[in-house]
Length: 246
Image (cartoon, rainbow, N blue to C red; front, side, top):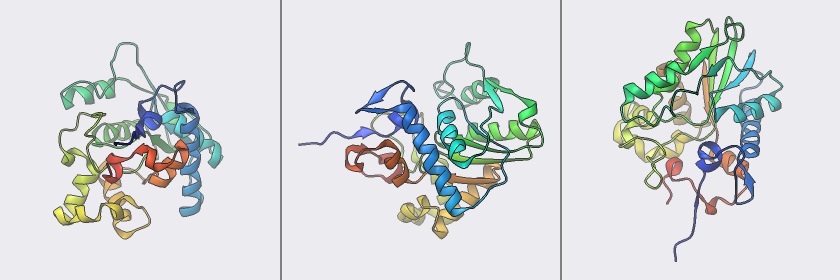
């Protein structure tokens, strides 16, 4: 008999903030997730020179609030997403349309960007295209530095169950492309190491993505961390896109 496994993205990305799945509220999970990420940064990186913590709206925002509360860094919305006339940016079939919509929805708050060291939390990093444009937009508006945190581990496998993104090939995923650039196909034998920021391969993955997307620093939530934030046994959760386990 097959066992039911619930998509972890229901809490980290898909779910509406007021929704509760398996007795676990989406918004509350995201605060906990951000708190765990901040604890990891404090343990591994020490005190960061950050003026404001913000979320890439909308689903990145509660993760960022949790991060800010734990790190005691001020939370601020350095840019506002204008939503009344634009659909979800990942919905259009063409990448050029997705990029255009994502960019047009961003309205800067100059006083919170100019000459500031900013740390943003996004729900995930898939292709990286829109995130690169967001970071460029922040630098164009005067940011001194932009640090990035992903509220989930590196996405290594395209979803075969819910198709949460429009990726049609694993090689559209930025983590996969970086591994290919660094080691070729044999690098895919070491995906677990690349996912782990404490390993040499993991650090190289993060460094390379920083260079590609112009981040001052980058870290991902760990698999253990997001499972802890959700509060369910890992065996009851689908984590396929991160670890390839069905």
